Structure formats: C-alpha cells, structure tokens
Image (cartoon, rainbow, N blue to C red; front, side, top):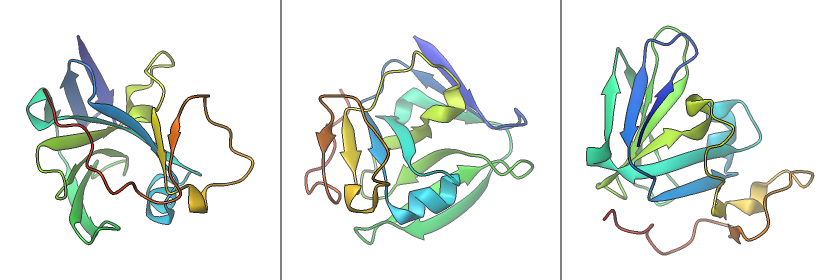
Length: 141
C-alpha cells in the first residue's frame, strides 16, 4: 500500500509505503504550537518507506529527550509534513492530517497527556502516558 501526505498547497509531499510502525497522539506544548491545534497525530514509518518530494525547509528543535527533531515544512504554505527524530534514527514521522484520509488508522499511543486539553476524547484502548514513555517505539521490520 502506498499513501501520499501533502501540504496545503500540494508542493511538499511524503509518499509512504506500507503500514506505519506506530500512530501516536502527542499533546506536548511544542506539538500544539507547531500544529496550531490541541494535539498532533503522527504516523511513524521506517525511514526507507518514506520519500519526500518537492521543496522543503527544515526547522530543528530539541525534543523532550534533548535529541533534535528535524521538521520538514513547505516553504510556501508552512505545513509541516514530516519530521526526523534524532532519538529514533531509523524512523520518520508523517503528519496524519496531511494524508487527509478519514479511514487512516487511529492512534494506539497517547503521550504528554499532562498537557492534554481535558475536554479532548480519545478512542478506547489507547496506551496513555502522562509524559513520553521511556521505551523506544517498535523497531521497523
């Protein structure tokens, strides 16, 4: 299966092959500010399963672990489409909203719930954490 995520103007795309390793909901303040929303939902893929197409600018910031996260965003419309977390060098994240697919798999993990908006609901069965879990995400197969 191949899915294409794209920015608002369509210039920057992330083409992902196969299923994600994991889908997260993140409620950290940095993700809230980056998305302009109350949470971020991202799909983590093996970095070899995703290719970026089109022009991108990169903004690098430290994550909660201190490791850098390199966010790739469209230089025209500003949408963040993908990011490379230094903490997990074999993975790339793609913003689920950029797939614009209401049938996309729901998150299985919710992190940084200590800054979650209390009125926000999540699906039953989500693995929930007040902060980021200490364990790394599953390794790509």
